Amino acid sequence: MENMINLTIDGVAVSVPEGSTVLEAARAANINIPTLCYLKDVQQIGACRICLVEIEKARGLSAACVMPVSEGMVVHTNTPKLRKHRKVILELLLASHNRECTSCVRSGNCELQALCREYGVDAYPFDGAKKECVVDELSPSIVRDNSKCISCRRCIAACTSIQDIGAIGVSKRGFKTKIGAIYDRSIIDTPCVNCGQCIVACPVGALHEKENIDDVWAAIGDPNKYVVVQPAPAVRASIGEEFGMPMGVAQTGKLAASLRRLGFDKVFDTNFGADLTIMEEGTELIHRLTTEGSVLPMITSCSPGWVTYCEKFYPEFLPNLSTCKSPHEMTGAMVKSYYAEKMGIDPKSIVVVSVMPCTAKKYEAARHELGNDGMKDVDYVITVRELARMIKQAGIDFAHLPEEKFDHVLGESTGAADIFGATGGVMEAALRTVYELVTKKTLENVDFTEVRGIEGVKEATIDLGIKKVNVAVAHGTANAKKVLEAIKSGEKSYDFIEVMCCPGGCVTGGGQPIVPAKELQYIDLKSVRAKALYAEDGSKKMRKSHENPEIIAIYKEFLGEPCGHKSHELLHTTYTAKKKY
Image (cartoon, rainbow, N blue to C red; front, side, top):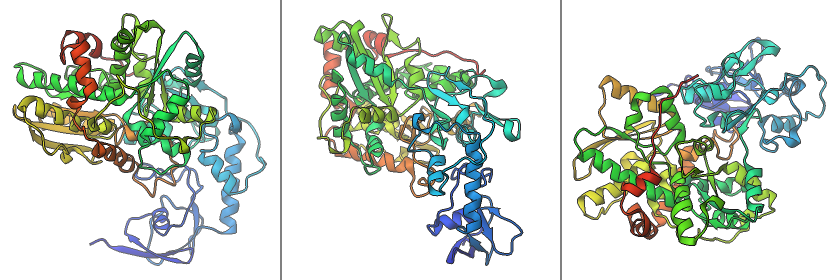
């Protein structure tokens, strides 16, 4: 039984487990203590000093995020001294900060800006020297602007503690403190995998995705271009948040309607590509399981951040990667081949735009391995945040849009495709189809709950008819590392592994809506957004990828068979080892 500690915070009696911090105790009592450098369960360093509190009988002020509670402690979080102190800290931060807030991508959703409003910061009494403005925009995915950096180190914590990559760090001290890549190099010259977890951790506008909004508007406005859009499964689980709608509720119909109103010529769905991926990947898995000498375990390849991580950190596992392209790349390839041929459109005039929860998809779309006949499969990738900005720019009232469907030919999908956005979803979707393809029997219970949930690494043994296969699911590259190291040491043996680069999968990707850190104390973002996708899956009559009539038609009319000659040409690829630096 836990030993409980009793204390008083702002006159409220609080009882929390021994080892808790004052900040945790305050939040348990619904008392808000402001923070900037703190990230729940990731970083508690007391660096920003915004969370200082007064503790009776203590010699000075204490940082609540690192101060352990003690029996009988009496804490004050809202006194004239503390309010003055916090205001001065904010004024000091603004002294060297780039204050062009109206042009900042985070204006209106900036934690520093919000605190300045709360504490009445309306002047710059310490205005002085500014940090040299260096904007690193060489990466196809991530832009760094150090003139807006407040040295909170949250990006470093995300990259190092969550992802175990360490692409960015801190150098020098005092006013000269710098957050960035080693030797002042661009982030493109580091082990960065473009996952964007640093972006969602950043409280200000020092990190953001490389925007493609103007490119997409230009394509839509060009009468010589036929512009097709496709949103990923996880987009429907989060887009509503950008318009004040409840978290954890999919907005599939309004998403389709909004894309149509933006002026795209066709509104297809990456969910179609997810079902197509399962047909190819499931068939590939069956071949590997039944062909002597095949490379096992087979590892999923639909997460571009994970693929890059494998190329840079574990190139010896590249033969284990599925050769399948990711769902949006498959959809793009089908648009520029099957659909173009069917509709009599010159594929060179087609522009494919993907709406993704992921910044790494921008890097993926630019890969030379992904294309055909000199054309890229996908021309532009925009994040959920970019799509929300476009909808607002167009004056569309998202919350009051009607429910509409995606366009046919490449817009139908099953429930198996919906769950691609949650960790374990690709694995579960593949198992549903592989079981029926092998056994020729109907799978009565399609819910493989063994591979669901937010545990870092999940394991199960599944009877697929061919054999009992050992499977594993890992999300976040730190957990992927654990799985790969266990395989290398001989500790573990698997047949099939799903890896998602981001914690929780695509639902918390680097391109998703940014939730302020203080709100994250009340929710488990991974579970809440995943719930929306599982609800979508459960509501559909078709829950297995091979039941999708559009998938059946595309093989009958165009591709022939899964993993056949034509599909290998259009839907499969290979990857090569890359240097970390």
